[in-house]
Image 1 (cartoon, rainbow, N blue to C red):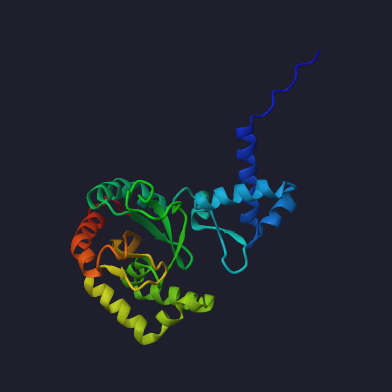
Image 2: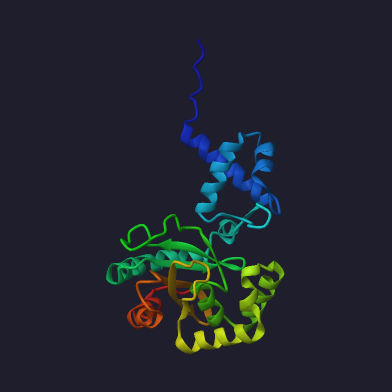
Length: 258
């Protein structure tokens, strides 16, 4: 009797399917889950689970306007093996963990990606004061979050202009008031002068407020560190007095050079 070929394990099969899905998204300029399922002849629930996993890991992102998935910079950088975001995350993770122990409130590390800040590391799951979960991979709007404001106020003017033009093309109704020239200029000037950005007027999340500082090396903003607190627990000035300096010190101490 001929030897039977060993069956592939479920883990290997799932891994291959995940790679196939990532490759299909990479080939397209935006693709919906149903189209991926049709092209790969896989069940839709299976494709949805794989897409959600890839999105959580930061390799793909779903457009809020048309539900199409596209690869992120993290996936694109697999080709040359170099991703500054990964380097920053690895270097910063111990610092934000230690900060969270000291400051108690949850802390996020986010990096810029395609007109949004994407949360790469977080202590939400470990903070007893967090009201949010499953934050890794979440995309944060640039103009309505402290992380986005900190990034914009610290990046070179030429980069900021490109991002703002992109935001105008996207035309998210929530961004409109902050894109008014006078208001935007004041927000950038005040943020740069303080050295940290603030979200405290109920924008983005009415239940929380936040402060963010940039991680800057050689005029390049590598990411932002944010601390989030329940809005009714602290006034913005109280939070700034407690949190701003520790955040700034941590951002300066992270041993990363790109």
